[in-house]
Image (cartoon, rainbow, N blue to C red; front, side):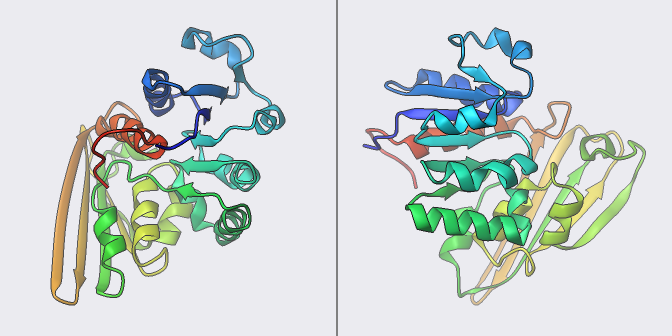
Length: 256
């Protein structure tokens, strides 16, 4: 059984709150902190006084065994290497690692201090296959189709708005292509993975298509999730909770 007990959370939006609820349901888990910009806006979380904080230095001092980020990519860039000195880190804003300096700093900190940086699968499936297929896979393309509103652009935009290396997609759409970053990290990397983004006005679903070719294999995965009104799909919060539950471990049968 995993001995991690003290868990810190960065962000208390839709995903963060789902993760918090999952953490509170796990026996023996202590919430070390919830780091947000404005603690007064999150009084409804019902946590003890001093648990919801805005001071990053105080969060670092809390000594969490695991820190889960569900905020923004710049948070990962700024804080992950320091948190990895004390415990493991799970970053849902994995587009942060498209910045070479950030990826290098994260990998160095994890290696130096014997920690792990977890990349969650988020809204898509198949990361295990990409990892296991190393050496056999020749090409990976992921296509995301969303409304312009969900993409943070003109709602009337229609058609392909990006087609190129995933590294560039992460820089241009850091809040919308975290699953692209996860696919890249699991498979061929940010420069060899191809990202495509398509806008459809009024589309209420978020669609991801992962196409993989290689030596003796060809995979075509399609995933659809209903939008919750922003950049998050209906499946993602549940997926996030499951990821954190598996990281923390426990008894019973675990699908890996």
